[in-house]
Length: 256
Ligand code: F6R
Image (cartoon, rainbow, N blue to C red; front, side, top):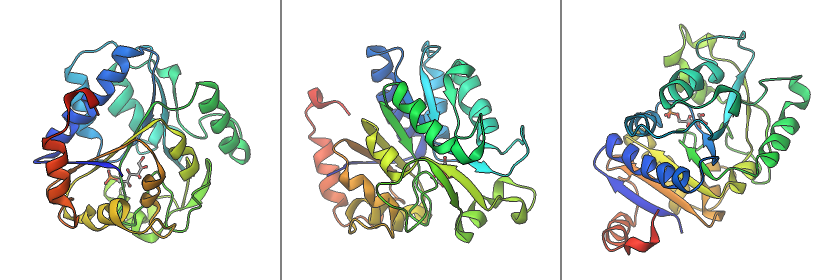
């Protein structure tokens, strides 16, 4: 079962995720991080930046990228990762990869898998979740065995992400995303979610049936998952009180 930590705010969640990253990097300065974009991880990056750690040797792999945006577009995930993660955290740009950042799109998925494998795999994967239940951009119906590949975004996700673009039509139809199989290979998954709009997806991911119709439910197949949610995102969890009890009485030696 995933560990579920219910906190009062996105800031508090960011501190917990930053704790996990700090602990990892102190034991391995060359750790491999899986990087989500979007609004959810922002408090994590902020909390981590405030700690002033030396992250210059950390290697990073973004979860996903839009397909079809002109190079350098401010909302490409390469630009977002540079602006929100690489620069504020002091990562080394050449050590941070984004899918399809080199070579033809046809082979970009396989190339990305090879690069992740060559780095020794992802140690800690930060995840958000979409209202469709997607993790990465694995929309409903994605295979649990899927690896990095090009996908079509749902209309719901395009509408949700339109806030980052001048107009909804500017949101690309396609993306390239780590697969659910790729994500499940990471050694530790940290899934964050905030707000009522994520409550249903979180309940499905943590407690619902394991189904491709809710890709986030793939986390139930992973042996080491930490789900950090605020009260609103936790509001549909049937076992919320149990998760609170478990966390309140957690032996310190267990760590995250
Ligand atoms: C982003 C990603 C997506 C987002 C999800 C939630 O790299 O993979 O799964 O995590 O769409 O987005 P936000 O955080 O903007 O609500």
